[in-house]
Image 1 (tube, helix red, strand yellow):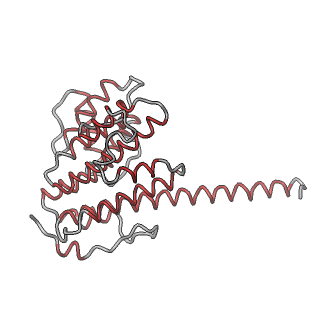
Image 2 (cartoon, rainbow, N blue to C red; image 1 turned 180 degrees about the vertical axis):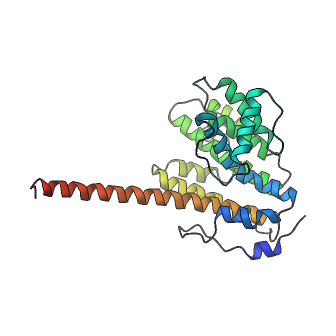
Image 3 (cartoon, rainbow, N blue to C red; image 1 turned 60 degrees about the vertical axis):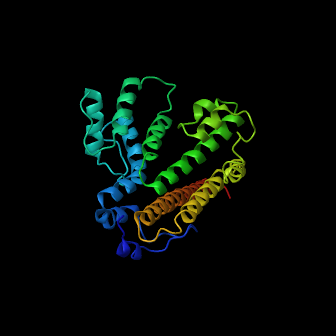
Length: 280
């Protein structure tokens, strides 16, 4: 197992308190990623592939010139090659996870069908791939997130009298319980120590507050399960995942700030229009 003493020692301490982080995912890719062993890079890839999932969907839906994120594992050219190979029935592109090729094939064959939630279909492929990771910490992280997402989806489906079976993805024991149990707690309250906390969070009607509570739960999972990971890839995995959480909130806060700014400008313009019309 590789250890990364100087890399870990050089990383800043980060906390989930709303403060701006002095580090970025792009910087991590530039400074840390090249020093990883090939096996450890594949483990970290699992986090970055979430960006590739978003990117390939945008390219499939909007064409090759669509704006895409820059912090995935695959370049635009690689993803376009995946789509072209899927369209032409060619062999999968080397160096790109096979699930992306298979998803592109399925999308292109059924894109005219209106009842398919492609985000869910791609997420199912992604989790199936990630859960097969040989790194037990990374596999545990993705199992935790799959369970959290499925439980929240199941609560919402029940609330709005929709099919829980169709909303849940994956094939683990939690997914099976959510699909088949008629119990109020799906028979999971005693099996998962975070079930009741999720239930309380799901009942919070304030969307942004609920999202913060969920990310706080994810942050604590990362901390609690990496206590004895000091200079291994798991410590770098945790750092990168936390960076992504912080960058997401920085973007949301910036968007919220811009909305407030635009609202203020519209209010001022309305006042000036009234003054010009002689209304006090």
